[in-house]
Length: 104
Length: 171
Image (cartoon, rainbow over all chains, first blue to last red; front, top):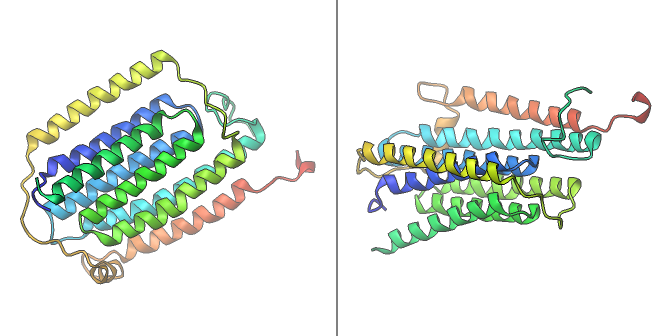
């Protein structure tokens, strides 16, 4: 367990974060952008758990931050998908380039 | 190399390759399935780190909840067999370069910092988490717990209001 240096686990979470950033830069479809955001949030969760486990093993703060981030990510995904479905009804497209007007 | 190290590197390679496939695949349904595998790999990483409760939460909320929601919304809004249009070459190159430099810079900082690890067993059993979550004393998390429950209620009501079908005569 402790034979893996902490920087190797941080390598995974950093790489996952930047993979998500790449998806956010190149995609223009709202659902795929939402998937990229989920990847970014997961990399942050890995960071919180790793720091809690290896640097402050007597505390539980990282675990709690992870639990709350997961909860808020679920709420965020639900609201985002409601907005996407509503946008699809009015514009017949969920491409961010097509949604240029904010009028009702 | 011990078995634990080999398992860690296998899980990491799985997570990263599935993540790359998820952001580069041009069929949106396959992209969602790659995301599902990536999230399962992250849950396996939590199991490897001995935080079983977080791993269970990851499987229940992400794999069982969010990915299913995303797949439903794909079915509602897309022709899922169709390929998405390719991103412009300039945007792809610029995005890849920005991401590569950002990653190199961040990992250089992490590698040079050299975190001082404490060799002490980490106790994360569910009873300890539950006691801390409903504790109103110093170091307890009762207030964030209640705030998050209000947030979930607000999000639920908001989703229903946003996605509600408007009546045709209102338009």
